[in-house]
Image 1 (cartoon, rainbow, N blue to C red):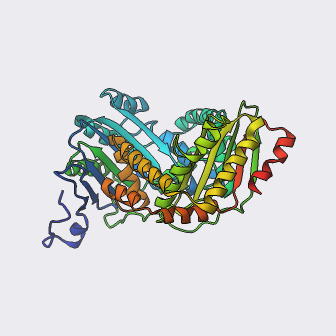
Image 2: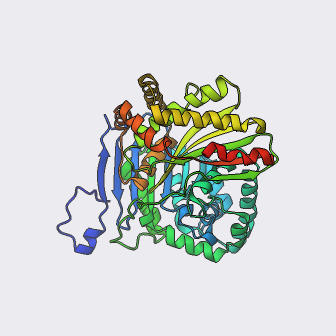
Length: 459
């Protein structure tokens, strides 16, 4: 393979297009933390982060497809496809795939989100070529057989049932629907029983062919890896599968756009015979590309990001009204959500909601004091670094960064950006986000009188 720094003056124009382009995005000290990127001729991107001090490596492939790319009748297809890529290829059976990684003590998995899907394997550094071969084979050579589709349908329906049995998880899907309605972002990633039962092998194959083109993929590897070796092995695997035929193809750009969320003040209640009532009170947040997201991250940490946060102190420590209470943000390409979750006894749901609403209103109107902001910045800095202490987290960071932002940021740059957030920026984003009228999602055994009072929380 020829690097992007080499000349190709003696080549024909078609040969020149076939040369991979490589650049160093982050230059680490003594090679540690160096991030490099190569674009292969078929539009496939390969990014790596080198950490020679470890003996492991994580290899992943990110696909630019999530549940927001589905039509109503295809809801759940992305997640269904994630399952099916483990069921066998022209080279390997499902057992061959799992036993190959198990035999070297590695771990392999995948996850589907609203805007992307990721398949990965974590192994010893010496077993990285095996992980590359297996994962690339899965992504390029899946058979998607009728029998496998029918068998896996049962497993997915069980996964949906398992999620519905966990109201603390299910309430977040309900909140997304409350805020985004019956849209691709508002529908559940897993799909529904009806949509999953209606999906056929032929429809899933067409979905696979459309969204798993190399231009839609990002390959990421982190740990004790050699960038050039990874590129050669990935290129060989994709070329073997005939997946890099379009020599002049270019990678798909990160998502963009503008989405308006539903009218505020909505309440959705799902009656369930549960021991607790599970609530999410929230409002529109920020898109993941919004520069104010750094200030929102600090605000979120101060409000509900730890044991010293305002919500934890007021709801749990001072009053003992909930065991779990926290705030969170979700950023998409064109919109975002800010939510406060709590699980409590049904008889106390209105007290919990009033405290949470009062805290949000208080911070929106008066802001946070400097000492709380300073503590939140310190907490966010520490959790950011501690969350990147293994090769899996590093692979996730560089893969998602390339797919979603089209750029990389070093850990030092991340810390500098967090530290540069000012108290005024936090107070301004608090006014903008928390000053909006909230909406509410609730799952629990609320009686008619209790349910009729839920509108008080969003009035």
